[in-house]
Image (cartoon, rainbow over all chains, first blue to last red; front, side, top):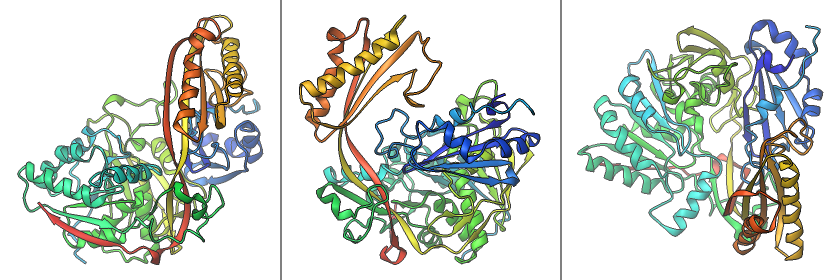
Amino acid sequence: MLLRDIAHSRTGDKGNISNISVIAKEDKYWSIIKKEITEEKVANHFKNIVLGDVKRFILPNIKSLNFVLSQALHGGVTQSLALDAHGKCLSSAILEMKISENY
Amino acid sequence: MNVRNHKILRIGTGAGFSGDRIEPAVELCEKGDIDYLVFECLAERTIALAQLEKLSNPNGGYDKLLEQRMVAVLPICQQKNIKIITNMGAANPLAASKKVQKVARSLGIHGLKIITIIGDDIADKIDKENCLLDVTQASISYLGDRFISANAYIGAEAIVEALAQNADVIITGRASDSSMFLAPQIYEFGWAMDDWIKLGRGTIIGHMLECAGQVTGGYFSDPGQKEVPNIAKLGFPLAEIDFEGNAVITKVKDSGGIVSEATCKEQLLYEIHDPKFYLQPDVIADFSNVMIQQVGENRVAITGGSGRARTGKLKVSVGYDDGWVGDGQISYAGLGCVERGKLAINIIKERIDLTAINCTETRGDLIGVNSIFGEDSNGYENNSEIRMRFVARCQDKFNAQRICREVEALYLNGPSGGGGVVTSFKKIIAVASTLIPKQLVDIKLKILES
């Protein structure tokens, strides 16, 4: 299955840093998300886009992860020549991550 | 402090960006039973653009929709005693306040007290030799005559002071987004300016509200996955806040959209880095233990926020001239369209060399193939149509226009079947950040009456 089946997401930008939330659609998916969606996997998923490091923050109360991707936006909204200079579309990309079928 | 006898304070959002819709603000005034209406209208770059406008017009440099918004809401706000707080002053808050005064008088509203908060503009004060910019890691002075503006993100204190002076409308320049929402909470509940937990909570409520429709179902809908009812009539949010800084986020009954745990979780984490350290002028807000709970239809409780002592530093947005960009697009369709698009990009690149177009950075995209997720995107090879986009940064307008002409020339000189050329060129104002000690900013209040 895809992450999209069990989570939703929103992207924000500040300067050249993108943050992407991953929020469990239901409580029962939280442990899978926390286990599967690691910094390493997210960094690999965005390797064509993100030049800096990827940091993960865990918010257990709201069963959400927050990923902070540095040097991810070609300099940020006021510098980048990219069409989606804010990186608004990146939330849709993270939801395409594959989840092991063992669950 | 002049604490009003509220059990529950009701704050609504009138705008989440400078171009936002106006009728949801009117709807909130009419049906939201709100005490305050906050218009958040400044993005990072907006104020630098406004500074440029002010240079060409000393009476300009404030929000383009200020007059329309005031015409729409002032009569009803006066009738219902709804206070307005906004950063629509942008680069010229005093001119904005004079415009509000003029609008009020033209509507027959007299005695409206408009307080302008000035002092965020520190272009003349900032230590340009020693302040390093985050993007360039060089001092501001390195920008030379490309430097345009420096505006500090000011906090809630001055807004609280304006409320204590019985302002009906408060106009600021670069006030921090969430501070505009925090200030009425501090004022109404009499919170101390070092009650970090409450200031943290109030900041979190501000954060939930500051993007307007983004918490009521905007930037959320994904058909088949996340549904939003009546989205074309999206209502803007309001918060019902108690004296402990806990809140229920909701919207006007029968307005479009949805307030759910999912919309609130997405907005809580919007533009957040480490959730324990959300740095604001007033406080370091701590989002890490926030709880989000549906408590009714389109009603979500936000509790458990916290905070710790502020850093004493203020973020400063520095705007600077970053040259020109020329941008041209052309469509190809049918079999082989991706290959024709790639050929078009290569033609433009070769023409840049052949005709010595002076540009410092270029980018060729095939929209529908690789424009968002990068060059290695797979699975898009069967496209029935694509759009080639070529964009280049140049030092001057002349070369940016030459890029546009090269894309347009693809009609007659490029791959077969290219259509729908659109080109544009524009001056680029970039923004970088730095930090300064809070003491450097000298805030003043100016009072006008209609």
